[in-house]
Figure 1 (cartoon, one colour):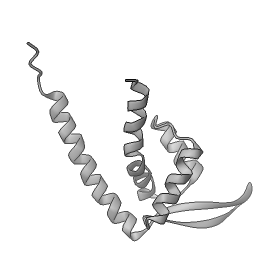
Figure 2 (tube, rainbow, N blue to C red):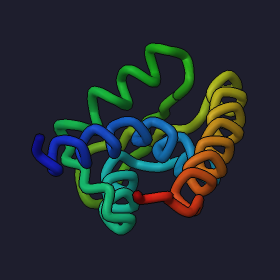
Figure 3 (tube, rainbow, N blue to C red):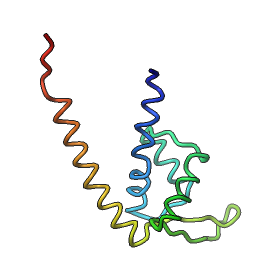
Length: 113
């Protein structure tokens, strides 16, 4: 079993939540989302992000608007919809519960006989 595959699967599992968390504080352009994810070492390429943004939008969790840009074509800015805000709050609770559970398991002394 390769560690890189497992690490990639773990990242994929939390990517939606991280995107919703980024958009919880302010609207964002896709390249801003990618930059934030890269800074957090959740390496994401545009080919991964755009289908995910589309899926979240089609699920009614995201909305977008077009804004003119001084440096090129109009930009699409994403924001959380009302249901997206509720979904994000629920995911936040789930994430906190998972963190607590993992800490309990990983901090429990192991009996190696």
